[in-house]
Length: 551
Image 1 (tube, rainbow, N blue to C red):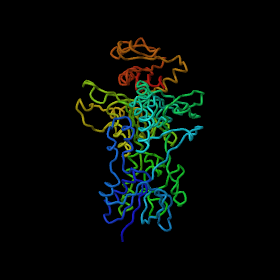
Image 2: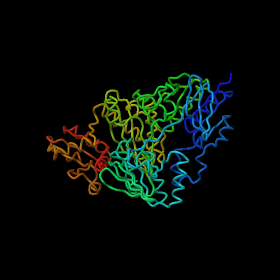
Image 3: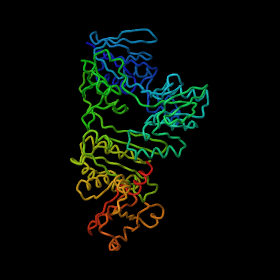
Image 4: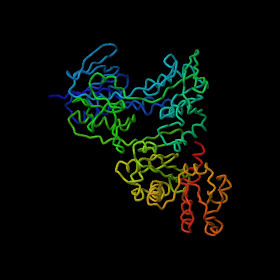
């Protein structure tokens, strides 16, 4: 008997599910339903076509409905919306151009994704605004720019899409303002690493308004006025909304399929829902976080494709399991890049861990080889077990490689002591003999062993703010570095002169040591500790301190 498989949703998870189902069962009758005009397109590439980085629009269309149908022997229905599921009859009701139809299924895969979350802005529904999630929405923005030649653009929302859209519109020669309600842009990232993107956006001419909410939108001819909660008014010719998404579960609300506390469909590791023979994948489902063991929402392409592959295989009679997500992502603006994996420090606290963290900074390849690019890395780990909980990094080169390594380490359940032992490719143009991932392992492991004597920049600044009279701040960089920039209360004793200067130091005072990025400071602290001084190394050095002065 032929297995009738119906897939609802034709982009990342849906197209992957249909293709995997075909590879699993050549005899299955597979139907793919997509309410839009396009399927299997590179939605992550949309901002880059808008900004001219990907000049050819067709590059985004990985398959046409015809080419996908031909390659995988799938019946593709575009401009067709699934509107109702009859689980008793195993039947889907669809609408295409207002005309209803009914499609029977043996196995159903729901991959209809997410829907946008609109901010509570007065007058927004009556205004002219755009979003940037689909090819059609991209086309509409491009047509608007060509037709009206706007000068100013406002983007409400400073997450992934907001940042990428800002770069695209800046490439179109618009004056761009990004409004983010939270204190920092890229609120899903550690602020001290997201700072790299913030600074690059600012130097590129992007106006960033953070910690402010848009409260009202007033339309006036071809222009619009955006009012903020502090009374500020910003005029714009083009308004983009990028305030996030939520699972689009309207189709399943009357079907009896279990919805979780976070608003997504509940699935098991085989992507099966609470209703037999119905699977779900992609942004519509809640995902198990490998680190916490709890469900989360993670609307990203990588897990969507993995889930689609799992659902498609199992719906066609195969046996695959999806292990869950870690939360690994990256965003860039111009040459600046910020990436993360696992939990942030605050997330780790909320989930009941006893987290600690360290900062390191090092070049992407041997520093003596031309054009080294520095990477700033924050590593989060559990104090009790030493297990790696997360990491966040920023820079211009080599950032994603390091975060991918740490993501793999988290998946494998490794501890920070394991990072000390990892072995990487090395030659001067391609890496360092001591990679920054190894160095993060050294620093974190030393803290766990009680021999690191590190203090975070935040801890140091809090102590300094309290005007602790016992503080003695020591800068162990060279005099030339010290003259260029130094902490206002720091005494400069270069590391090479430290031993001969010990007689001039007061053992009744606590010494806080810094260098540029932390290594020389660590050496200094070890010397001071050996001679009976209470000394601490500021993790990440002066570079980390400077970041926190900017936040």
